[in-house]
Length: 252
Image 1 (cartoon, helix red, strand yellow):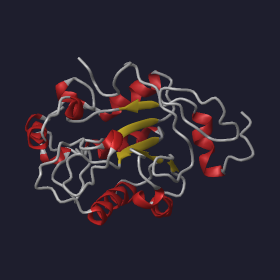
Image 2: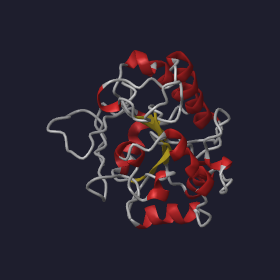
Image 3: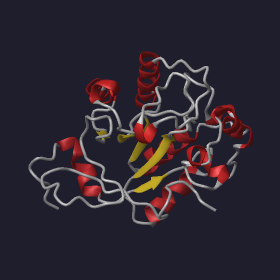
Image 4: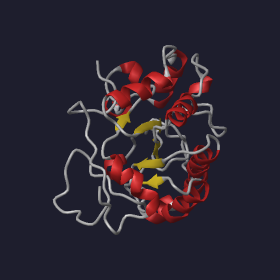
């Protein structure tokens, strides 16, 4: 395969991979109504948060997930370390809203990273910048307004939330050995709001060969969703699609 001249060396594996498996998994999987169930059904934050008491995917087998991806022809895996609901599938020191604080008591992301490392399967970690669970998250107007149906007592502190989100990205980059990318989601605000260039440089400092998408307004590749771009000639992009026409997470 001829790699375009503009593709930097650390991005070549991603360009050549061509096809990956994008996994959405979290508390919303218990409901079986997609990853936006909290928003679409106006589930209050406290009510939704109680789902952690029932989260116990005890049959989870990281090696089986990797083999499934390989059998499907995927050459990398992207998985939700944290979606918009704020629930973390990794053992973050910055929150108790995580898989290790449930009956499951396991670091699902850590196990999957190790399985990928052991088998030579690249892994990219999806991380949602918006966080419907976090009281300091600012609920902007437009598509992301009041997604968490926040209590009136919330007094969002944006700099505090920035520190939280950047701290979690640093955890993902430092705590698990080599990873192959970070996939941000929720790019409804400016590069300054997300401190996009700073976060990009942080990721590259700890994971020099990791790819970073464009949704912190600063990255290595574009991510058109459920569409193919008419013209991104000369640009690296990943066209994302779901097996469901209405969701990315499990629907029963």
